[in-house]
Image 1 (cartoon, helix red, strand yellow):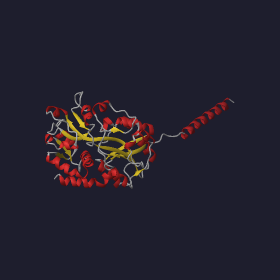
Image 2: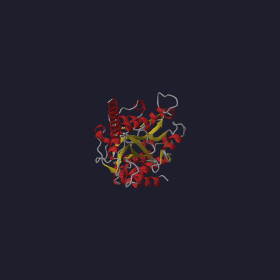
Image 3: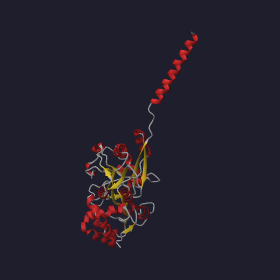
Image 4: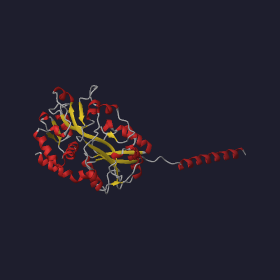
Length: 353
């Protein structure tokens, strides 16, 4: 009888262990993170901790493909639209927006976070692309040079062609530079068909033209590390804040400032869109929402030196103190830019030979 009791007890234990194994085999196993891929330009930057937050909250892995400048990035997206390299494209701006929309590469998505975004930045009312950030391209000047030489800060395009500013301005070629193109568009918006006559007056006044922003700012501009010969440069309204933020020794004042007079700046707005034929549409929508969220928006300024479009986002102190926003930037519709951009650049190139 005792042996039978022991046997029954052993059987019950074995059954219990088997039941536990059965429960374990039925329990759900953790799923592998889903990868979301973003095609963007070389200037894109965001804090790793911010991306990790999205990954942890969504069981996702975020991958970035950086593909040259905005034009090169867009070309790649158009050429591969039937088999996209990514799920999302970020970084097309209003100078290329019409081309991107005409190529029909985006899925429409009306993010719920748009309620926090200023309406002035929502240029595409079909929601194929949504605004993420903006920045103003303006002339920056060397404050010390102007003070030492008792020069008045120019407040109009016409001022720049005056004799007192001869040989003092460096600009970028609009055919090879995004800020160079933005400055050309600002002059086109201001002067209309007379923009080439204006450029001829700048040429006569010794304007210096270089291929790209890095050369203009770090080689030619007198207030940069290059200590070049020109005290005025086409750059960004956030550049004075960058001068303070990246200074090797703490500064209480920026050595540069921006000229944000009416019409003298051109506003660049960058957009994000979900690429057609993505296999990860739901996760792509979540990442777009995340890019528009306060957390992401507040991380952008000190990474890309752009302004957030989310009205709830707080600016870092260095932006509040040293960066400026143009109240009346030059205005051209993205459709007008798309229809005429290449012709304007070609005409400018011919005129400035």
